Length: 237
Image (tube, rainbow, N blue to C red; front, side):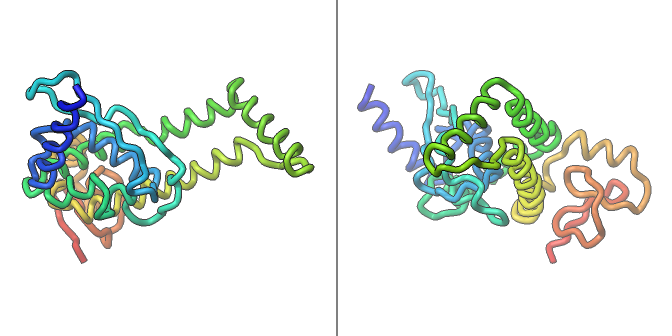
């Protein structure tokens, strides 16, 4: 088993460098994995622990990314890709760089559209506020305050709700930043992906209002793909 895993990993890495990542990897799960780190603004390009899972040792099964791990580099990058996305020593950089047929870029953009259309960020933020009112959240806050008294000899005005509010604002701004970067960096891919959201815009909007690729109203100076009266326009300036 150990020999099989070692050989398979080496073959998979070579396939990624050759632009054949889809032969070994489930691109959708990998796209979700890197998108999560992009949303969190992870600054740890190499240290972020990356795990693959594979059902068996047959050539028919592809590996997928089963879990996120190692978050101490999160919430550092505000206005750029995560290091796991763009650093040349990071694994996922080559999934984008050598993606000549745009298969991984398409999977990534599809995951982004799904993320925004299904309001995943709203659900994530709601879950944080639910955690704050849970027994675990209340215990966490008490533990932090008591630790401050024990270690520093003073009471702390730290609260879980204030921390959640801080990261809520950060994540909302980060989502907006990612939307602009994705529309600009992958404008050709986004332009080729037809979604029900786009079709609804075509059917329902017959004014000169301007929308972005996700159907949100924007200004005429918006950079990237714009939709006006059901027609797509690309502003790369």
